[in-house]
Image 1 (cartoon, rainbow, N blue to C red):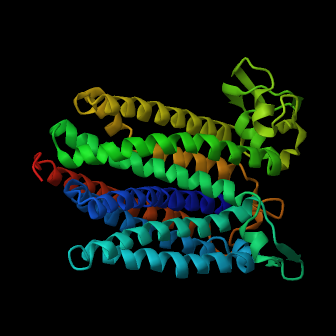
Image 2 (cartoon, helix red, strand yellow; image 1 turned 180 degrees about the horizontal axis):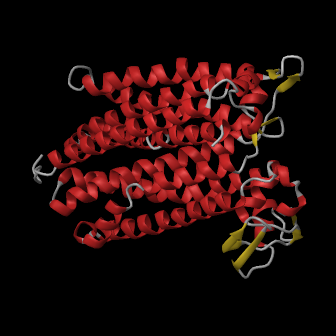
Length: 444
């Protein structure tokens, strides 16, 4: 195995593991904003009790997310030195802004939120969790600025002598064509992840005790929030993001949608078996409405959608991975809408607490939004290949030539063992905290 492939595997491993935690942190923080507000303004003692329980889970998730994020950033300088040289002038500002305006805001007020209960005023305590939620969202914004610039570069000029892109317009670089669609879709998906995290743990508590007050309060909030944001993640944020990809990255769009031949009035493909060597979809299952994909992408049933065969072979992304990951993400999104809709209906009817099959479905579905986020990230990043920076820098020209394959392989093994231990520790502490909450009765 060569150094390039190993570097890509290592980066995928570290980023993929890290990306399990920020969606939970963002979504859970905003859910706690609502619960703590109810506890403060409406003197809701159950909301306060619920906030205390989930504050511990937020702290645990935040700590692991920070630890894994540091490793991810170090790789830019070790394994991807040529990439760092190329994007350094562009990425410096947003990454610095993320550290100064987001991370310190989030971490400082998280300490006040965790340790300031009953030591500061209720209003200040609520403000502290609000700032944690705002800080985590701002952090996601600046990280996505850097990531989106790779997808749709803007506000730069090429310095050929130094072999790098140089910033000419901070505004254009920040609000590049893919930034806002990606940001809104990611935050919406994070709200789904946070809601399912809360719903799954709450459902588990109710399976042990259907009168568990924390379980009932948490499930009430998370089911309705989950329903709202599951819909928003699909429409409009996911839809608008797909439209942006169709206009700015047509190769990726063709790959994720399985469009191999250019056609006007392209149908929407639901399922198919991808054959990558000679690009073709076997056993295609299409929705019967002609031109549906053209309409969804361009607002015109007769619009042309370029097929993958119209692009040079060296510019085509991996076909199987992008198609499968994108369609699995969409499939899971449909499940989230269905499950939260059923749960919300049962809650409205007043008998959700006794529906053990639905409660078990919520428990089992707890990690599924994180898997959907992984599928979405995979489709976005692998779909950008073979470019590290779209149309400017190829991935093959981005890695560090001085780092040997043996060194990278050793670090992959080491990281895998550390992450396995860290993941096991996270789950152990998570389950322990949930089990500690089980004995709580219906009394506050």
